[in-house]
Amino acid sequence: EDKVVQSPLSLVVHEGDTVTLNCSYEVTNFRSLLWYKQEKKAPTFLFMLTSSGIERKSGRLSSILDKKELFSILNITATQTGDSAVYLCAVEGRGSTLGRLYFGRGTQLTVWP
Amino acid sequence: DAGVTQSPTHLIKTRGQQVTLRCSPISGHKSVSWYQQVLGQGPQFIFQYYEKEERGRGNFPDRFSARQFPNYSSELNVNALLLGDSALYLCASSFLQAEFYEQYFGPGTRLTVT
Image 1 (cartoon, one colour):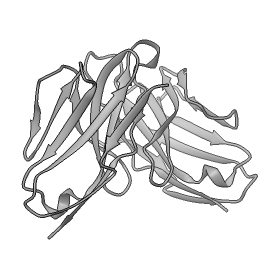
Image 2 (tube, chains in turn red, blue; image 1 turned 180 degrees about the horizontal axis):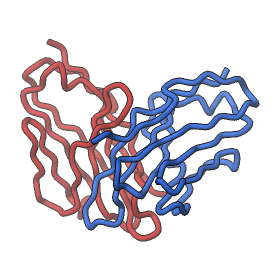
Image 3 (cartoon, one colour; image 1 turned 45 degrees about the vertical axis):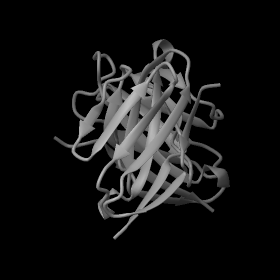
Image 4 (cartoon, helix red, strand yellow; image 1 turned 180 degrees about the vertical axis):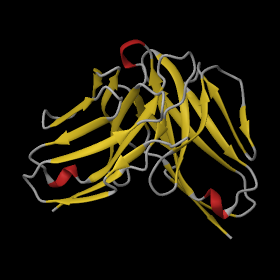
């Protein structure tokens, strides 16, 4: 059975700290790995990763994929209170499962001022 | 451009009732997927539709059904509601046929079954 595991499940830091969120996966016919931020309702798209070793960067957020070891990390530097949210990792398969996302449970990040 | 829209925002039903949730994808997107997110869990895949045909179905009972209309909007129906069906129901739309594409989520419908 396909599986996506995120760690830690919960993280509390202070503003200015740097955090690393982890996502490991076991998905047949892997196509892409996606990171989402969920604050209240709709998950909002952060990154899509398809190739190993290529870092995606957006402001203070960055992410990288290791297809050999089957994991990804999401880094947030100089955290702000607005970064408080649940961060979801999802993996998409190919072929008959194209477009179908398998999500992990998410990491609840709380940033204190 | 409007994002993915869903209606209603909130819904309260009693056990045994039936519910219909609606989703309108981003203009030009032909693929719509439905997910169920129970509190404290990640979203779980329910259905995927592309060009009005079902492309995939997750591990959900037959009480769950869906369809996609010619304008690519979609409905999710749940019959004989159970307490365990209480969740946030998310709709996502995408191009799907492009080499690289993103899936965009709507704000969701919060269903409470009492």
